[in-house]
Each structure stands twice: as structure tokens, then as C-alpha cells.
Image 1 (cartoon, rainbow, N blue to C red):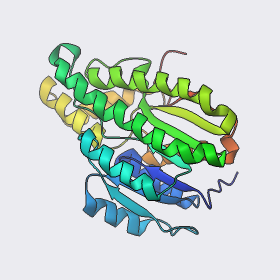
Image 2 (image 1 turned 180 degrees about the vertical axis):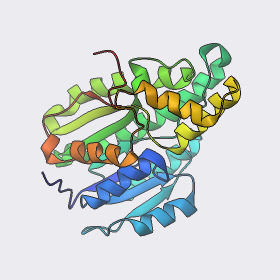
Image 3 (image 1 turned 90 degrees about the horizontal axis):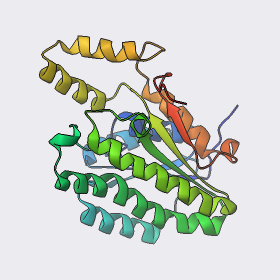
Image 4 (image 1 turned 90 degrees about the vertical axis):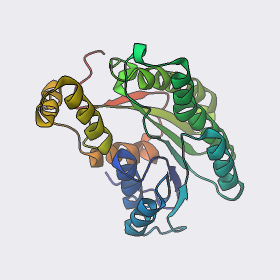
Length: 261
């Protein structure tokens, strides 16, 4: 099965590294014109230059800080004054790790701005063109923790659950316009984020870092951590016409890690 996204314009958040970067690369491989978003201009510039050249408008990047919502709101609003997108991948850096009792109310507000407000606002801007064009793809990078909360990720558990329920509501509203809205429930992938979390676990538990990683791999039925490229393949499929009847779903990509149905 060939995934053909030629002529489609994609906007991918958090795409300077990890899963976001892999998504941007695979969308470009499938023919889309991709705009990357993240904080590091040097990384964005380097990645954009290495993407497979697009048949349509050239790839581009937008320097944003998702953790500063007021600044982000201005930048993304200005972007959409002159740009339209067909594929929106909502992805940001994750909030800080920690348990429910470790976090203050202010921490939850910051996580809400980072993970929820930025996603909803960007989608509202992008969806105007999608409705006019009667075609669109909205894909949210979420987490398996919305089904089985992880004790050390209280902020992510809480706010990502709000994202997927919002996405389900939105999917029902825009389905008649041939716009699909899906959320991906992310398991363990070999990214800088996982490395940072494992380092913190290693320090807190007083055990070697390689033991932390091995314990993580042992939890997964496939006995390995995912390759970000595998994530990109799923997103490219959901972004294509091949997935035109899939909407309102929460799709785990976790090597079988989730134990619930």
C-alpha cells in the first residue's frame, strides 16, 4: 500500500526531535509539504534541510515555545493569516514529571496551557480551511496514560485525558466535512523524553540507568522500546485517504503494553 500525500500541507508540532521529528520525516517521505514547529531554530533549520524535497510548496519551520501560551498564540495566529494546512499534528513537549501530591495547582495550570489550550487554539485556526476544502486530518499525539495513568506523570495523565475527550467531541462535529480527528496513545519510544525520564528514575531509585531501561523493555510484550519511525508510519496512514473512515478513535501504539481493552 502506497501512502501518497502529494499536494497536502502539514503542520507538525514538537518536531525538532523524537516522535515529532519522525512524523515530519515520514510525512515528507509520503510527499507532503511540511512545516515544523519547535523552540530550537538551529535544529529546525537542520532537519528541514534534510527532509525529502516536496513536490509542492517547500518545507518550512516556525520557531515557537508551547510553554508560553500568549507568545505562541500570537505567532500561530500570524502564521495562519498567510498559510493553510490540510494535516495538523498536535504535539508538544511533555510537562514535568512528578506524582499528584508533588504538584501544585499552578503546575496543572501550566500543563493545561501547554497541552490543552495550545492544541485547541491551533486546531480552531487550522480547521477553517479544512471545512472550506471539505478535507482535513487532525492527529493528536497523546499517551497510553490516559487509559492507565502512570504515577510519575500526574500532569500528563490529567491533561492528555482532557485532550482525547475533546478530540472525540470534535470528531463528531466535523465528520460530515470529511475531516477526521484521531488521537494516538503513545507507549514507550526511544526518544530523548524517555531518556530524561529514565535518568530521573535512576537517580530517585538509586539503580543503574541500564537497569531502568531493561525494566521498561520487560514490561512491553514485544520486549523492546518502539522506534520513532514506526510512529511516523501510523501518522502518515492516518493522514492519508486510506484512513478516510477512521475518526474519533484513540489508537495505542505501544507494543502491547496496555493491559486494558
